[in-house]
Amino acid sequence: MAAARSATSAKAGAKVAIPQLSWNAIRPAPVVLVSGPEGFLADRAIRMLRDYLRVEDPSLEVNDIEADSYTPGELLTLASPSLFNEPRMIRVTNVEKCSDGFLTEALAYLESPAEGAYVVLRHAGGVRGKKLLDAVRASKASAIEVVCAELKKESDKYDFAAAEFKTAGKAIRPAALRAVVSAFSDDLAELAGACAQLIADSGTEVTEATVTRYYGGRVETNAFTVADAAIAGRYAEALVGLRHALASGADPVPIVAAFASKLRTMAKVQGGRGSSADLARQFGLAPWQVDRARRDLSGWTDQGLGRCIQVLADTDASVKGAGRDPVYALERMIHTIARRGR
Image (cartoon, rainbow, N blue to C red; front, side):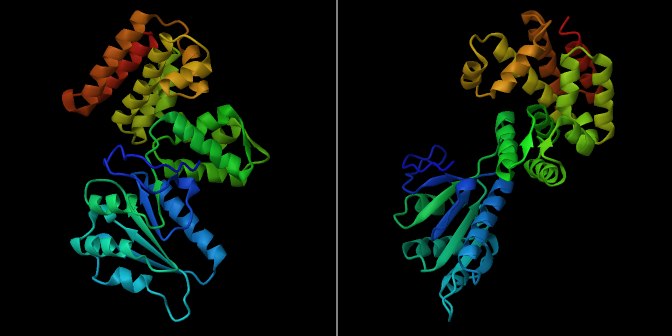
């Protein structure tokens, strides 16, 4: 949802005088700053803008500039009106690595943007080019910023996938949606691709069986599936899943991260009071995550959960280089968790 505001940038400390929009609310403007580390969302937003402009005028000219290998005069040349005055879209990449020449000319361009031109500045993060970002954000010209923040929380990825199906008019059962998000939680582009395939190839409703049919192998070796089995006390299943995942090339670090995510949620919910919706708002979770954590906590004690979290911390250190055998550390962690810390 679009969110226009005039505030102080929390990260850069600069005055923001232009609208700041979410990736799916991008719209035409003479200068469009696409900021943030989530490259997939940034690429999609820029494609959406290009498609929109082409619908408005099929004669749209699209050109690309690399800010880190900039040729002097390139921006002004491409932005200048042609003989037939076609609209121009100029996509500028690598602004976070821009050359001094580009920075100087881009700052000058902000003072007088060319009529009929749409300059899209893609900045993936970092301090390089900050002067230009501050100038765009403080600009009184017709500029907007499209913020493409990384989707870190599982609930954010769940909401993203749910929106993919809703936009396509395709129904999906909650369990199926959780399964596909769990299977592709490490890569947003892969998650979007999986959603697109399910939307295109399935019937009127996507079920958990549909997800299993298409992505059963991925679901089975997913770290969260291994964690679910261990937390439920199914030690043998969790151990087989772990070995399958490792044999398929899975990295031990994300596996530990999946366990950490589950146990952290359980610990929050264990000490919380109130409805699922109340706890979800309090802890930044989705209501279904609270319900799932409450089911997972069946049979657990505070002491057992605390011990498992301690073992988890030791395992995290081991797989990141503190230990000599990360696989043994993982197996020990699964054994402890499957016994609920007893």
